[in-house]
Amino acid sequence: GHLFIHKNVHAEVRPFGCDTCGRRFSQKGNLLRHSLLHTNEKPFGCGVCRKFFVQKAHLVKHVVVHRQRLAALKRCRRREALERGSSAEAKEGALRCKVCGLQFRRIFQLMEHLKAQHILGRVDK
Image 1 (cartoon, rainbow, N blue to C red):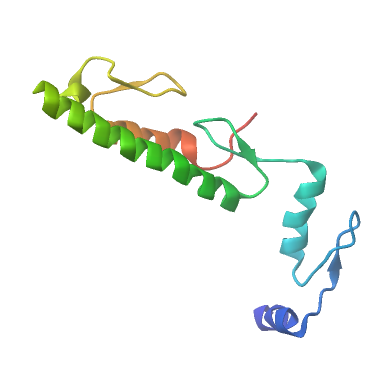
Image 2 (cartoon, rainbow, N blue to C red):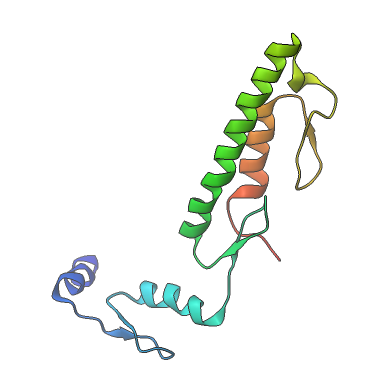
């Protein structure tokens, strides 16, 4: 079971070998993940910028960039609203999803939409 597989890690037993490059792995799942590097298959796509990744972990790390940009946009819109004395967020069409074109009145609605609809998960090319 799991303990046997885990012991292979410490014993440096690597029974699973890559047919393409010869690299060896202690777990079959690691070999399968590695094999995607040789096929150029990138099944995990970012719905915001359309970059694709071999592993979901790489996509999740990439999404941080978009979240940071959204946070910066939120701060900028708040500052803009304070300077104008009106809600910049409430303007018609002030917040539009760059992926699908939907409009939102509040920045948090756009952020939730992006997270739920476009950022994480597999995206068909």
